[in-house]
Image 1 (cartoon, rainbow, N blue to C red):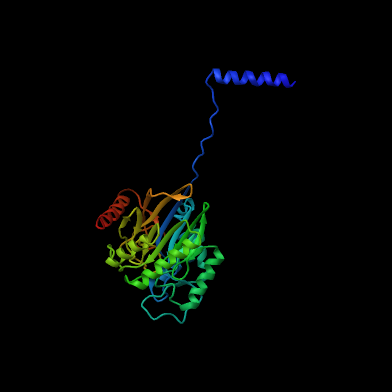
Image 2: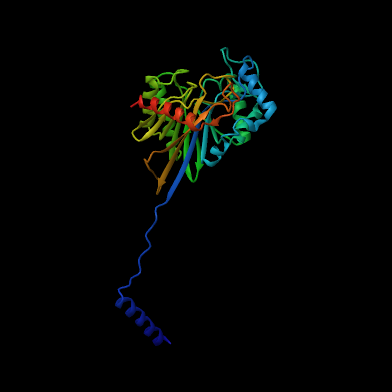
Length: 334
């Protein structure tokens, strides 16, 4: 029996050698993971009860329900791996006291479910309206988001979300000038996220001048500092209108995403907005600098005559016009 096996083995070896056959070692394949981020601008659920925007928003809620507001864009966010907006306003039942200023934004806590219906995964609360009802309003907002399972970040809250096995770090600040204090905050937040294992770091800053389509000099210097300190994408809000996108050292700074579903204005003069998308790719755990981006042109409302707080993808000539504006604003940064 052993002799027969030996003969068979000899025949196999002879056949392989005579036919120049050999067995290849399997080539290890790289481990590739991709994450698509979709980001949009200012979302104010409700608004200021002293102004028309709030009452118009509430009429649409009463007549159409919570699904009304993100109905036309929710599939975009659903198909993304991570969707982010700026939640500008408190989610609280408190109506007084509030900060003494022209506009204070709030909605009842259960309105956080509007974000759930819209497939929003995370919100920044680093803005000048989440604080409108002081610490109690911030506390209620955080609780409302927790109930819906929506992540939040900004100011003192640095957050890490696991997406497709990648740890995505999120942070941001209200920034009105470039000084050492703000730079220290940014640097410390990035180091904190790195120390906690973040593989990809996204900043969402609240900055700039309202109604201006061009960033202030301090926005540019702070945005670039944020990249230099280790962030891989910088998003921006507060101007309520579009600003340009700068590619700086291989990474993007989106200076203003404009309003999105914004209960603070019943009839904005400029309804142009966007959803900014970027796909980040990791090869064997290493983030690639490949700059795969997509800009989806959007109107803040599905009707042109007033605000129905229902962001809608622009099409045809309208889409070309919005994309053209973003390109012109971006060219001015080069």
